[in-house]
Image (cartoon, rainbow, N blue to C red; front, top):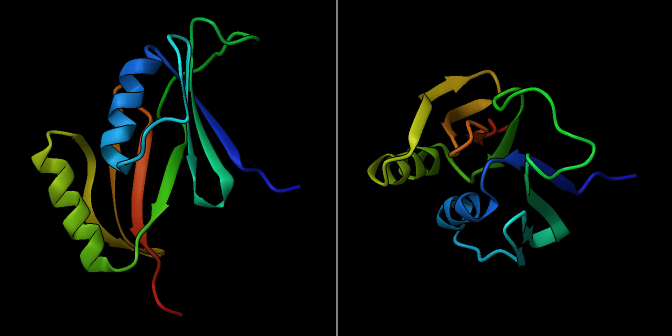
Length: 122
């Protein structure tokens, strides 16, 4: 078994799809008022499901976990951070070096965390 589909529960899937399209430069494979889905290389899927229509009902709040995006270098981490700051995205953590590499974190419109990182060379 290999997990390949992540669902985030959002207030407005269409608004969230615009956000993620801008981040990843990828059009949603599915889009409706209650659900949007992106399909990435390797058939990894990101679903954006209306928290008001998901069954069973979603509980909890955003920010309890994160979607992590690996990048090719520490310089790319800094460059992507600069582009996202210039686009006005909410930064939760500025670029910093941690045990697992250079990283920063932004929030999506619902407060879900997106971590961009470059793993250290081993």
